Image 1 (tube, rainbow, N blue to C red):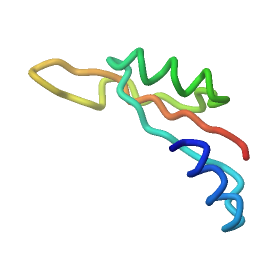
Image 2: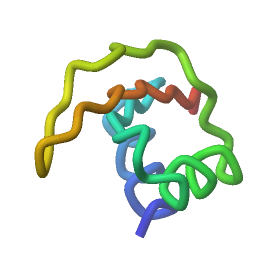
Image 3: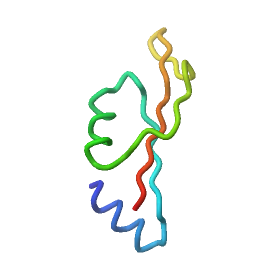
Image 4: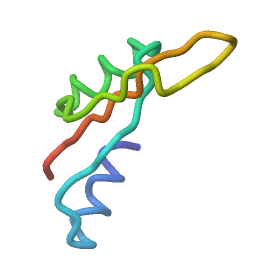
Length: 63
C-alpha cells in the first residue's frame, strides 16, 4: 500500500510525504523508519488517550 501511495504521489508531482505517529506506537515508528522516513518534528505531550499523554512524532520521506 505504501509503495502504491508513493507512486501515485510522484505522478501528482508530490515530493514529500509526512506522517503523524503516536510516540506510543513503536511498531509504526519502526515501520516508517524502515521505509525511509526520518523524524522531522515532535510535539511533546500533545496527545492524550486513556488518561495518558504522549508525543506526536512527525516523520518525513522525500520521494
